[in-house]
Image 1 (cartoon, helix red, strand yellow):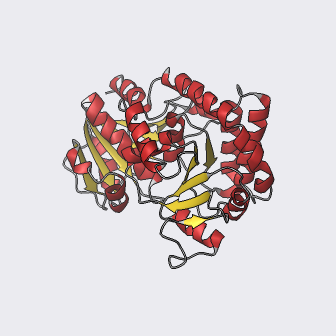
Image 2 (cartoon, rainbow, N blue to C red):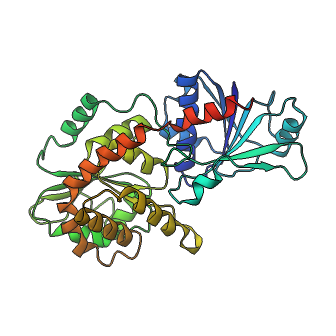
Image 3 (cartoon, helix red, strand yellow):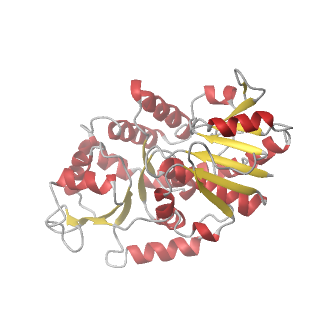
Length: 365
């Protein structure tokens, strides 16, 4: 089947990251003929500098859209509206394409009842279906390629990162610019054990500099030291392409992630993580956080469950209690790591998102 995936870049890397992973997997593992239409190609150049090596066509989204023919499957990623000239061509196609709105990832209960629902177009002979990624068999599942990072690659990555301080707790930091880093760094500054935090460029690094009152001029060659003994260090790292980022997540002891793509990848890494959902009006993101916590933490021991929930909620609030919450959260990292492996095993038993999409569309084309 031919697939057209339409994506508007809303917040740097998240939306295009999901769409590229999907397009790449459909082409590589399902022999699909895929075209990814992007309104901004720059984030993809950073996320996947080798994108030209994959059998996916990447084309600029302009209005009117310069296309040759309507695909068998048309995906609107995250509610982006299709170009009008393409929509009209879909209505003229016989038979019409399988048209999907790929929704954002959520653990909320209502997702299961809305997954797969049909929505007739108000003025054209077309029907759109809503397709929800999720965490249960009643949803579309999560993106999961067959080439998840191997143990050998993860071990090499970890050894390289901890070459100078092998006993450190290894942390990755990928957050939005409103994350309460001042409180987090204050908690780390009184750490009795070594900690090495890898900070990604863009919003995470800008937020870290603001929290520290630091600039490029005051940053040492080896990053920043939060304590006099140098046990706790913050190290800016280069931007990581998707596959390298996946390996890094699996190599770390704790990952701070945000949005959707890194959130899902942290779960495949099966390591403890802290999630910052994309901020939304009316605190919608906090409801998403609470829904995922209920599902994810249900089987945790009570102490680990309490520590996880308290830390996540404060991380997504004012951060007023992080300094007090961090010691107990760190003590629960071992049970959280065991839980991460069990959670991943549960997700592996379900269809991945690309496979679920192929099954859904094959029955309708």
